[in-house]
Image (cartoon, rainbow, N blue to C red; front, side, top):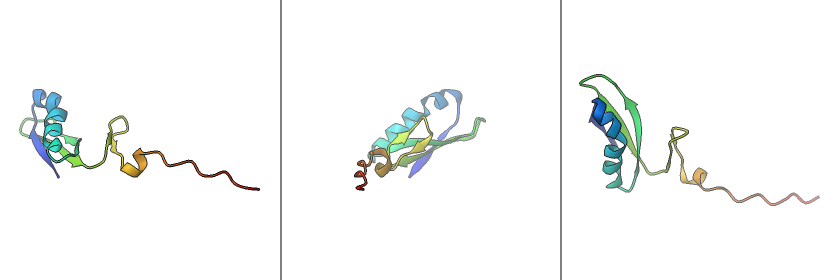
Length: 76
């Protein structure tokens, strides 16, 4: 699930908010996948069920987002 936003400089600035409002309706996070910076082109986004790590540019599955418990120490 996701969508397209017609590209313009002002809409590029607001793209995350526009996509976020759309995806929030479904309880999902928005992730911008492509920006074509030409008049008549578009900004593409996906709605993801995982949290989005924007610094890394990826969606993080829940099993990765929550740290795993530490393994038990080895017995010798």
